[in-house]
Image (cartoon, rainbow, N blue to C red; front, side, top):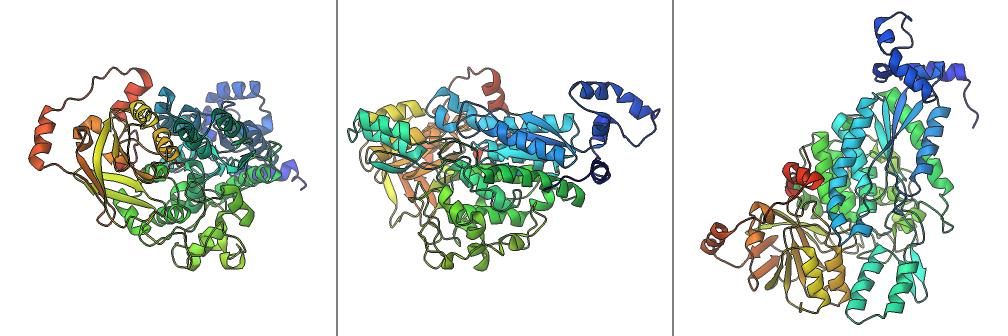
Length: 588
């Protein structure tokens, strides 16, 4: 496509330069204008960074790039960010790259480093706010990949009511090795459990380690990253069709489709500046209901509960955890995706991406089609040309008339005397015909629990309790994928329940109940559970119950003391300021 003449581009973009005048001064003012003179020092430094006279007339965009070469989810982000900046320049703007921390859940799982994962979500949001506000940029294009970066880069847009959009860096392709197909991050964790249980030898484990993840991209199933990329597109804060595309080819080269999405996102950012559409114009209560509906339909991660609550908080939308069940009870599970199914996000992309899913939901009255999106069109307009599931020969996405599971069989918000505020149960289509009740096996921390599983100390019917792993308690609310996957790998996934004030990976499946609030370190009832206590999980009444009397509960509470606090640095700061998982674990 031919570029517009520089003179025409200048006329188009000058009117879009509003906020960034605070940084550069107004290029249309007189040279002796006091504010223009005041900003001379800023312009001198910008010239040293490469600005020319004409650049001071251009709008500035914050290009959020949570890059690190330490993880496959985001190790291609420099190329994506450079492509976005190049397109911004071609269209007559200037792109300022904003780097942020990136913590891989998969790599830090089961280690001290995992404490920093959820912490990084809010640190990323703060980094973006700092850069965007410090340089008074006019718009934002926010790249997201590894699961905390997807909500982390969007939260500041909601917080600041900024003009901009998010773009997903892409999903990883399925892996394979001799004797194994359709591998992913969950396959690796469950293989560890199988090895520990004597069901797999070390050579087979090594083959899976080497073949499960073929290149760049975020974890390939309906785990947290793809859950949140889908939620962000459903919210209307990403362009239609961008949530599902693979990051790279099997040759590990960034796909032309993803690079094209980078260029299209840059053009959309200019359109948003022209229209004046801002984040909170899109992030309405109905938009959050759309996102949650899509999350339930896809069988998304329980982390989506935390992140949607946090995003709603940032957007000033009254969207509470108590509302989740109402949407879950009318939304069937229709996506046959791992960890509960057999396909991956790349398979959804081959069908036409998330618009195919959203059209099925919209046609059946489950979405608000009138919601505005960053494309400048409504949800209904965005999905109007998507194929109908009934016209596709495949079993990746089921029609609502023939779902994988009926409504009410995915994520359920529970309450009871063990979780007076709330807890989050993920059953992903499994039947709970009767309550699950069993004796507690209590562990103060994930490491001791994992060691007990691998040592064969858990037996069918037990309820494993892992506590002091909440937002304040751990701190950082680490994921319990290691013990959860170890249970599945040991053949106990359907017969042992796991209850925790920590959280779960999107790859977790089994009888998993997390986010128990109030958490242990604040004196929540989960701190008072003793070995042998009977815990009951009753899906029919949405109740999580500890089988002791109120008097016994009070007696134990009077004797309880919190563990010593020896934290320093970021962990100490986070413990002081983080809110409950019940409200999204936000930090201000």
